[in-house]
Image (cartoon, rainbow over the protein chains, first blue to last red):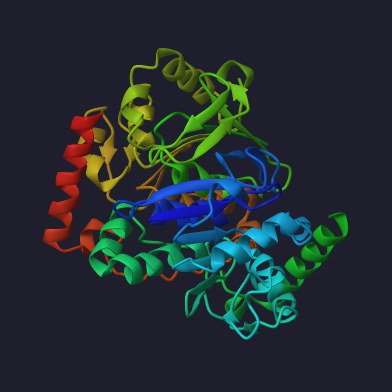
Length: 213
Length: 213
């Protein structure tokens, strides 16, 4: 099973690495990191670069495609060859996946119309603009389109996808192998449980980031 | 605050990316990915390469050093310049950190004698061989040495470290920003809650991996 994971400048690393660390452990999975061009893609914090080993046109029929998000997502909305590639490969994937604001790229490619989907909590309004039906859940399956909430949701998404694709036994093995027994120190990882002051601070920072971009 | 994160061939990507995605968001943090040599380091699954921007000798006084684990850890036990670098920088770090079998590298550098520490559940016995006091917890602080359990534990470790270093408010902001509200699909992410058959399968696979290496 071929898995294609998109890389681009300004993406958030964990959006891609969460699903990768889980999905690449499916027996017989072949994972390929793809970019509009081959080479290093520097992630949102500036301090980390990941290598795209393949150009988009070298990976034409993946079974699974994963589109990460991050501040660099907004530049990708005008990346015609990428949006065209997503439409083309989506025609025959088993699963088309996004994490975080990667959902907006799927939206930009025009494949979320009428689709139940999620994204980073700060981008839920934008999602509706692409005709998607925004759903406040951590992982949303709608047919073979699978969308995850912000950044760290890709781990839960990956494990749910393994269970559907390769069975619960395989999912359990991978979850124990990566020792995924999360113990978050705070109870504020979802906007539903964060206090108003915290939500407001991050909303302001998000607007600032958007102005910079 | 300078944060140095080690990269090497055969490491597990999430071991490094979990702490990175959290710690690099501390205000004024400067994160540097370091390797014995600069350049691409290919992770354990073979399909992903991360770029070491700096050589070890270019980063001599980081406040935080993070040592990831993975199957490639065993080769690093004979990497004299790395073990020497770890001993040298540990002399003045605020926090010396490992995730997963990265703890064995800290052990190999000789800095875990008499230290309470954790590692991947399949490597707990090996940890005792370095004079450490193995502790079956997800994140263990002993003075300024912080060790995490397998692979995904680096996220929880990172957030706990942010809370101690920069306060709970900063920790909460980062946790909500990366929307860390985990919902693992199975209740078997810790060996304490996995059934014997599953534990046995992964133990066998682990032995197989070690023979291959």
